Image 1 (tube, rainbow, N blue to C red):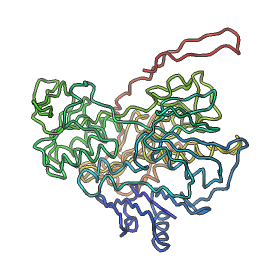
Image 2 (cartoon, helix red, strand yellow):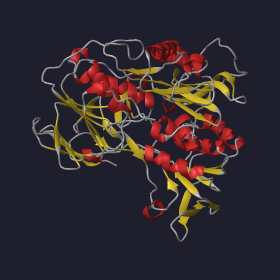
Image 3 (cartoon, rainbow, N blue to C red):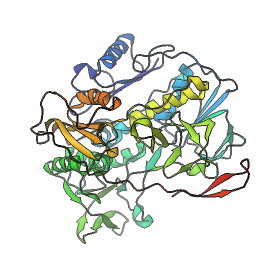
Image 4 (cartoon, rainbow, N blue to C red):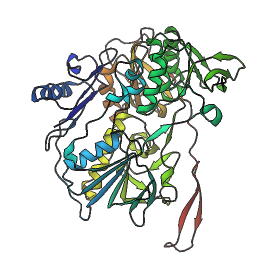
Length: 529
């Protein structure tokens, strides 16, 4: 038996942190526990803490028939003709799906394909504890129980999909046949756009275990100045870790304030104050025009869009992510830079907009509709979403239509930076207004509710994560906005203000239509940009 519990969303409960061989303590009341072989006593402590968690603790427990998440057990399902399942993507979503399939009784052939040579590992600590040396990026492996009886193809990326013959083509030319396929290829860090500058020694990204290891080694060498390009969550977390290490750091972002793209500028201004108070040289509303290196090819200077120059020793490109979909070119699926489009049951759409019955999608690469948010298609790069969606997809792969589930849980996200735990539930970017409902922004302990067209759609907390479950229920019940609540620690005013959400760039896909008869009519995707 192997077990891992992830408690990133727990706050205020002392039993959420454990004394175990591999415990990664975080700021505040947070804790991550990776325990590959717990004893029965330790297992009971973990499960009791998971049940007491005020938001949601996630437990991967591979004892057959035991409760695994939210205290539930699963009955086995079987779908006729499903003997071979292939999962492309060997990270959290892929591993979670593999465990769910076996737990639900799938006894056929199971193949997991991954482009990295590493066993599945957790990415949460890579931009946090791994950079300061609290833990090693090499010690974040997720449990891979031998009881899975899976064929692992690690370090062997998929390069093509033959839907007609139901085969995945690997880089070495091998073709792996399937009856059901799960696409869980996730995302990769968006590279610096100028190839010659991207090759400079000292320019880093943070996405993979190798990325985090390389950056941690550079930060441990006490560089004179660190430049972080991008003030989203990853960039802000890296800047926070630099401050923790006592390193001078400059953050440059095109937006008006940090986190504007995720939380809106109204809340982002509070994040900006946090950064400046911590000593970050924050430069918003501008960009890095060029990076320059010395004669040995090491990054040494950055020229900003306002003409100023910075001397830097390490630069971190935190420019967002690109979804790993290139291998699906020519497959006939509705896949592009937006990800792989699927329905709420995780079934992939083909280019005609028709759902498939043999190809499923989960994790960061999936783009799916959510009924709470007007059925808009959304892609969420969140740990919890990958975990939950993979279980739904795995269940549906081996279940008959009436028994299939919908992936409609509310997304939850968290980040620890500058001594503050920022957590959200729902989709803040769907809102147009925000209101302070509890606490004080000056104290950095508050709850902000987001709303759209008279109903609450999301909530963000700063060091008040124990309230997320409460606000989640309001969102599920389509409670009115601004919420009319009697709560502890009420603010002096509850007047909504514009959320100032930065509009995301539109998703464009160019197709041509061919044929005349219904049986011949189809679309051809010619532009995925």
